[in-house]
Amino acid sequence: MLTLSKFISYALHPILFSTIGSLMYFLLSPSHIPKPQEHIILVVIFAGTYLLPLLLLYILKHFQLIDSFELETIEERKFPILFLVLLTYLIGRMLLSLQGVDLLAYSFYGSCMALLISYLLFYLKIKTSIHTMGIGSLIGFIVMMSIYYEMNFNLLLAILVILAGFIGSARLALEVHKPFEILLGIVIGIGSQLLVFFYNR
Image (cartoon, rainbow, N blue to C red):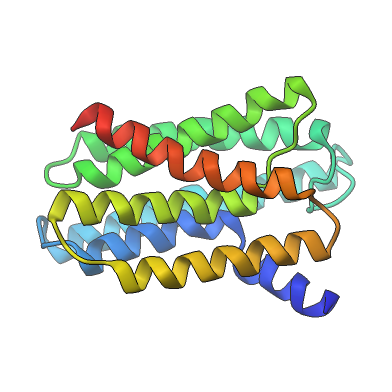
């Protein structure tokens, strides 16, 4: 059971969800920009939200500023989360400056808001599950797409909700989060996406 939980936690790591969400956006939404431009955007997003955070973690681990890549304590999470807040904001701003990908830009602003809320909660000694916040953000983004494009993504949403259940269960089985932290992550993830969407609509 623990081996499966670890596999789920790594295979569905939160730093992957920005790339997954962006890929879904280009596959599911009506085409707005040339394919080569889509590919460049995806490469930038993958590098910015996956490769850079991994590099940061390796540097922090090398200089013994964190004990493990799991970032188990609130203190270990503070700088990496703040780093992701800045990255997601900058990517959102870059996307908003382009033509035809406004909704994708809003999703990054939503992720930025979710991460910022998570960071601020550290000062209340509350540790949010970044895993469930990541899948929650993806669910919120697909809901945004469904509303914006008036398309039915119910099957996809059902699959994502089931995945959220698997992720939450895995984090509980590994005893890295309490049920409240799991639920809080999902609520912040979905809520931040929808707040940004309806504010900019």
